[in-house]
Length: 170
Image (tube, rainbow, N blue to C red; front, side, top):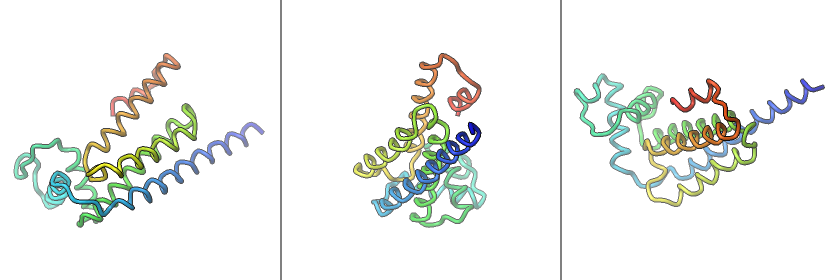
């Protein structure tokens, strides 16, 4: 009987993560027509050039850190070539990050709170100019939330499992 309850609980968690992914992607997709930003275009252009053999900081000049160029290069390899395609791929990646955080922390902090925070975050960024652009600051914000959750987990349990150490290192 207990095993059946665990399976149902796990099923609810996976369903919540899938629902969160779809909802986040749908909400972010509604903002795809926002104005374009120069740094965002830089990410797209250098990502595309890297797929054609360009070498970052050698044949391709940039003053930015490389993470977004590599992400955009992967998006380009997967078929993104227009602003809309890059943004849709980016929104899928962000939604995947939100769903992964839900899977990791729903049991610890509760399903409802882990389901609602990305929605509140999305509602808040859609009202701010350029906040739905393909920029590293979005990943930085998700990383800061993950660090805060790991801190709260540590504060509550006074233990640091290997999985927490890996999350903090990422």
